[in-house]
Image (tube, rainbow, N blue to C red; front, side, top):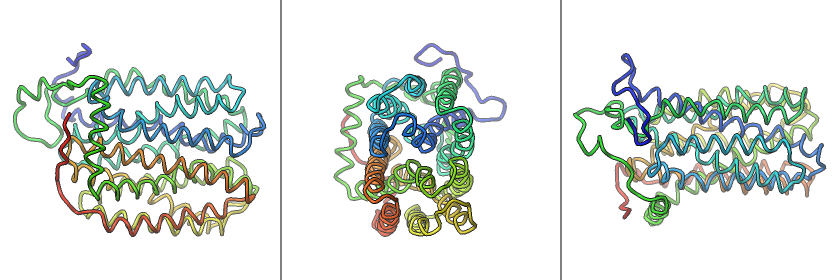
Length: 437
């Protein structure tokens, strides 16, 4: 029985280790978060058409959401240490459901900033990939790279499943029906999270998957002892300690560019950019579904490779490939889906979330399994800050120049810079950064 009084089975279910069930529900939570994140791009033009808002106004709401999303992640990881993974995940799903549902009644752009930016930003930030990294670090002693790849693929799968559906729904029934569907999906997940996820393997009498040895009394009784304020202090103390290392700034800097070149420009501006070139939203969404399909392949493959190849070299390849795709993209934009454009989208898809498993694994190896997920939370925060800056800059470029060409070239150049920077990340293994809790 956990701290909340909910009974859990104290052994493996059949021959399946409970870690895989926890990972499965975590995947679904990340999938719900992906549903909203992938919907933003296809909602921009309908919102502008209905309310008369400018691209800069909608980009502001997106940027605020991305900043809140990213900065919430490290504090959410610390709060999960204090209050438990399950409780924070349920609260996050409620925030996403309420924030998305209330958009049905909004009339002003500041309300979009409040709902998309703040409420949904808090919810998605609490169920970001940091959530998956924490679950992986606690529940898996082996296959961490593979599990991180599977959880990272939740974004790709969400895009694959939800984007075409949302685009068709918006085209046939309006954006409000799409928002309502996302809110309902978030609410439906809450009972599943509450009854399946346990905060730690020791809470249900288990060792992490792949670990050996008997449970100790300390592990069986282990609970976070920090207050809410001290949980936030733990996140800040971890940042201060990590910030003294070169590895942190290289990981954070390259992930800043990762956010710029994915959520910042593609997720937020690809569909509006294709609209500028005369392509229907459903066709543009189908192209992003191609990205999602191949990202699923790329992310799972990246997780498998991260257990076998130096993660730094994988990151060099991923950012280099992404830079090539971004520079080539504006050359092939048009009203029709031509083979060269499909090839670019396939290349882009193969490396989209593929950066997550090696980056999260490097955080765990360099900073340790306890502090690594919190460090990854800060690295992920830089990812979303990069995305927020890109969303705002790209929208401004479009308003000023009338198209996105310069924004694509800028993003491609930054990806190439990230590829070279990854070569400087230290290859240290299991070093610890001391943090006074």
